[in-house]
Image 1 (tube, rainbow, N blue to C red):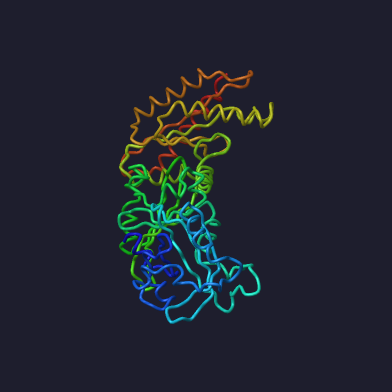
Image 2: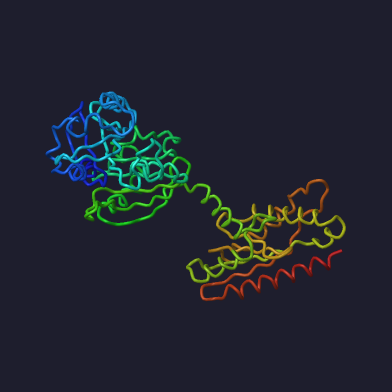
Length: 406
């Protein structure tokens, strides 16, 4: 529905002024003043408020001045004594705000004071003396890193409240009344449109929307009037960029070895289990062990040993394909999963590792990297766990061969 539908369904008595005459009134206003809302249309302000009986010190002529200020974009409030059609009077706060998109008209809302929040004896107002609009704006302004918007069936913004939107270059004056299709990039609009239309059909949904280098959580739901009818859609938007970065960081740490930045043993085993159920056979596995790490630790210290492990990780990373899973699975132990690689392809990769370790120049006269290597290949139906054990066995055989050399 359009703005008029939301206006008519609002909880607060509201009407629209042009000059000092009412040109529209909602049902709540009719109930407050004791008549059908259409009977209020055409009346002047003097017909609604008792002259000379203002609550506080405002003069009657101030109403016209404040209405002019509201048309200029200001928000003005007066405390007045209202008069119902039956002649009974009541104390109320009368709030004037500019009507978006119409320079000649002003939106007015009225809140009747009850016994508990009557301002008699002073002009101060506590929480109970605030208008519903005050509560709404206070709630939204204190909503952390978020925004609240209402939209109609044409997916035009009826309300857009948020300091975050303003800081991002979207003041509410540039948003309200505009189509979301025109405001959002086409790709973003295609992502959110089904959820917006779903809200207008009565559905709740939550989605994450990347926009402008940040990530937003958007909770979309229907906005209903007191009778339960859907009068608009509502979206609560929250900037979750920091949270997503933290989640990504935790996810990275859970899958990677902190010393070498290679995958860790847990991730390697999860990938091995996943490949065992897939269609990526043959799968080759390389087992690699860094030679001489204990000697380096004993002679030069553990910092030098850590440097040797990082150098080994660099050699392995440049030797394998981007899709291969290169992992540090123990102190000086590495393993690599090669999906779709035959035994012949695996042997080619082992030769590449040898060339790269020979070409690697260790900095500051540190020990050069040298691996003991083992390779095994599983065809479809064969166990990858057994293949890893076979690769380990061949790696240890290679290590013994190195130990025999002078």
